[in-house]
Length: 186
Image (cartoon, rainbow, N blue to C red; front, side):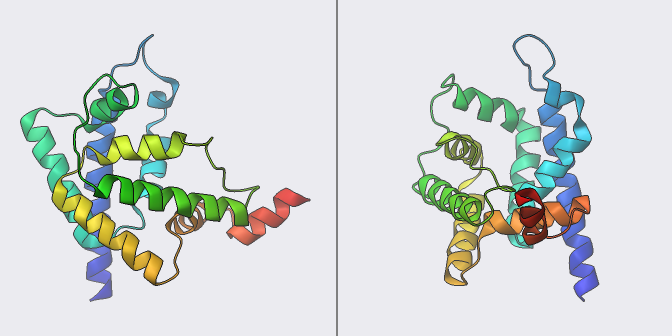
């Protein structure tokens, strides 16, 4: 049964990331193609890191959001970056936006305090602003599932930023957070 769930999860992740990549590559950039758009495999890795903490229900809901966006001509990446630059009015007024963004920012701050050489804070409020703008593209259903994941993680004493970084280091074959932090201190 577990293998079947892993297959479903991997299938969801694959389609989500490929749909996001299509949107990302179609996002215009002032001055031409952005440097990061020239590295689709790096994009895939970072988005896998972003989504690795989500359960299957949240992933399935987000995939529905992406499919609906494609069917209606929306590009979440364009919307996110336009929101970051205040070129679009808010896409959502859900109170869950701030709940999730605040919790994820707190997770990042806590993880960066524990592993300051490996996990970067990303400059003040930039991370929170970036995430909140991305969250605005999600449906209310996906936001509710994400917020429930945040609450569960807090109740269980888990840090989602730390979990993401542990996943990334495993994916890259770099060892554990503790090993990387110790190596960076020497």
